[in-house]
Length: 334
Image (tube, rainbow, N blue to C red):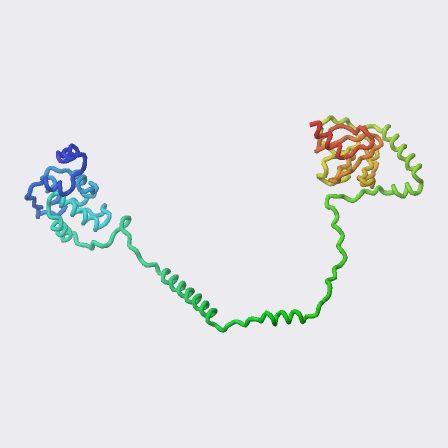
């Protein structure tokens, strides 16, 4: 860096303007004529003992741009108009006539000064589609305006007299009261399964009477008590069917009764109607549907293992047990 740069740094803490820089130059500074304008500027700068950085500091032009101007290499520069501006600032910093130096530059490097190159320059062209879009928009606007004028200025609409309309309505014959058909039956509950009817149970009971049915039930209970049980089930064991599973196909209340040995199972509703009745073999089970008020009636309570939510909770403790109490007892046990 030259003594000039040091004087600038040691000054008032600011950069000198090109005019202040020119005031420090000799009054008589002439560019050489035997070389091109860039070389002449370089010689003038060196005659003053200045570096390229000194001129860049005073003109706020990049040093590599100034070095390219001294070589008359315009490729690194953004565009020719910028190069002309850089030459003018360079000449002013040296105390030369800027316009005279610019005129010499244009004579030696002829060309147009208006067009800019990318990336700093941009040449705007009107897109061909813009004209079509404008034309279509104009046609649409004219059509809308014409339609509004036609609606507003067209022939008046015919309005029906309110009194005449009332007279016409009054002249119509009275059709009489509306007739409604019989009400439709209520749809069946989707979650309520039809009661299971044991084949032959009604016929046997009707033919032999309640005494014979009671004797048959006692005989079945005795046979079930003497029949061997399946493997004992530990509390909390998962449900594993070892035969047919009757009742609800899936879901329901989550209660399953599984026969550990042959037993009779009768499930009644709140009104006493039979929902399910069957002699279950060892391993067979019944899944309770989502119906409230059901009661399980078994002949041998210890033969029926209770499963709630797929887990064993123990055998029945009595012959008649509400299904809801099985779920409640399991919840309280938790």
